[in-house]
Length: 250
Image (tube, rainbow, N blue to C red):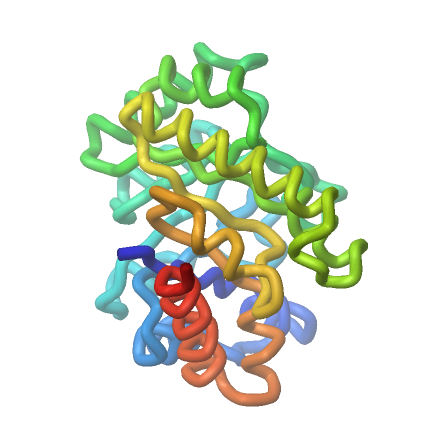
């Protein structure tokens, strides 16, 4: 059964825009759970631009849903993860000037550092994940460092989908989808879990959800954007419906 992880970072973005106390990310997590989310994702950035340490503390203690902590592979973040023990910790690249994560983690250039981080997380009983591009060399490197999960960056697919007028059958979209499919096959062949996410929306999610072996989709901005108009619970419910329907299509 494919699962939906809802990223609630941008609920905190709205709050931080006014440096106030609302909206409360924990409330968003609870509403997402009631809407059918299987997990909650937050990215505790080094600059704390949206999610704060206190948010992660409250999510860990006050909610009853699986927590995926996105983070850079720094000693500080690994220490926080080991203390709070989220169900999964996903190592991601992080740039101070980026609006959102701009690409996959380059494991090849820092294998020893990442292997140490994964080892510490694993020793703490935390499932380790890496956010990478659909690249065979990076998948092989992920296996070497001991990652249990690979989340494939779906941004290039989403960009092609939007650029080509939401035509899922256009050659550019099909080519990007095939890259993700091939990456998923390679991940599964190496005994790792295949997840996917980034820039997925209500319009482009179904071709990704239909890929064989994909275990979880992590989606944030599109759901939070729709929640502004229909509420978090309803926004999650609709995304979950689309994902389930996709698995039933021929």
